[in-house]
Image 1 (cartoon, rainbow, N blue to C red):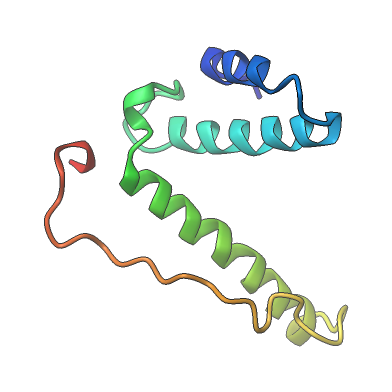
Image 2 (image 1 turned 90 degrees about the vertical axis):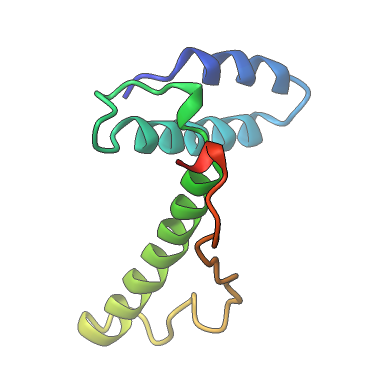
Length: 105
């Protein structure tokens, strides 16, 4: 997985952060920009115009849903855990906007 040049540029601004924080930020941002670039019609290249409010909302829902489903599967289907660690965590429900803004089209 290669990083978008903008990710590399942004990472240079974090030099005052702890190494573990920098590594986590890079991994999270790289995963997000790769997800954006891999969306249908994107040809695998991240472009700043893809970074929209709608894209962030969609990604947040995905990121919150996956661990919950994995936890449920680990408990109920595989019996690997006694309790789902995501149980009881508050998640913000994001609703689709009623009127799309220009950057959301």
